[in-house]
Image (cartoon, rainbow, N blue to C red; front, side, top):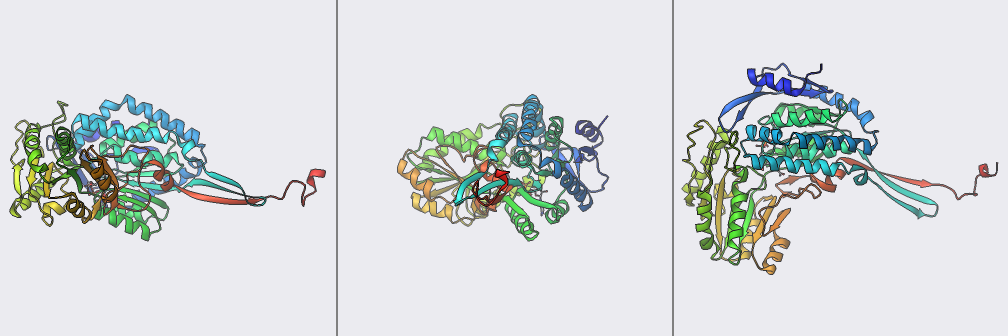
Length: 509
Ligand code: NAD
């Protein structure tokens, strides 16, 4: 009987063995002395060990994916869609247990974990329409008697390298569309949260995906470098921090790969004095503290104009002080969970300290929050820092934790100028009742994803996830039609046939 990843994971958990890789349709636990611990952030306990694979296992995975490409790329799109349709049904059947897996290894609460998975399933639903999405173009008589057609063909072996903060959604941004387009794929989940990704692929195997079409490998820089440089890899999708995204983009390009690399962010939430303050407070709390601030779309800075700060601070502080912090792996309420690791916790606390030292004022201080039920969990309470100035470390760095900066400006013009002068360009939003201000903001703000009277909005599966500047390296974004273009290449055929009856004699025979 073939081993499933679940049986191997159960074995792993009891002994804290490495978690399995998936090559050529088989799950195996690689023998390697190098591992990274996977924690349950709610308790601080190690729940698994991720094997850090090197170039030898990467080569096996790539060779296998290359072999599988020959048949998979010839499989009719509608047959590929049927497998994805079965996959979608299996994901729905396992929805709650997958959400619990996300919550356990990441620390986000179950409501957030369900959102992580639901948005991923929406990409699978979009990918089920692949016969329509893959249609090409044709024009008769580009010159007399000459026709031209364009079809899109798959790239070959594609790779996905993922961050820790969306254990389901980010891998699902990548592999469903890649395989729907006829590519084979190698998934490298984050070494900090590999367990949900393994389960996602086990379900795809159950849905009938042929061996070798999707492979899973684990590791860090050594593994990633081997993928980036392997001659048979054609395209790389990456999501993670900006310095690594830049490195992936440059190294991948040097080795002739097509690369899309989404990076970090610093997203601004503008609040004008005429805003609906109830709506703004709710939006800000959700944007800044959802998933304990560990989202590339976190609204980490409130940019207040004129008297908006005075009107905002009281209700905002009240709302933030009422946020309950605690373990998310048992009572699945809407409490805010822990951050990913003790190192990350220390880094965030260090950034808060630096803000205070550089003259910002703490309105709500989450550094001393203690969760008695779980003293070893990686907890930080929600924090608000007011009067943050451009140039402070906390204003420049992506904090990636439950910390909201407040910056004050006299007018919209100066605030837009500040936001547009920073390197990132992921998302931004504005709360106002002025159509004129909203229009000005939408048109001029330097960000690829913009919200008006909604928190920093992550676009749905049929739109591109369209970061700019230091938040994205490449041309074609993840999700939507841009993803279809990324995972295929165009072939244009120009055909000339002489007119029926001209030049040939066969029709007379
Ligand atoms: P990370 O950059 O540390 O790691 C991402 C991936 O890169 C992991 O798989 C890791 O193994 C690999 N990696 C790490 N260092 C590497 C190196 N030196 N060389 C090669 N590979 C390396 O990111 P993270 O901490 O896991 O995730 C958080 C970051 O991801 C944040 O910056 C967040 O904004 C960003 N993110 C961006 C988006 C987006 O759409 N723009 C979405 C989610 C997360």
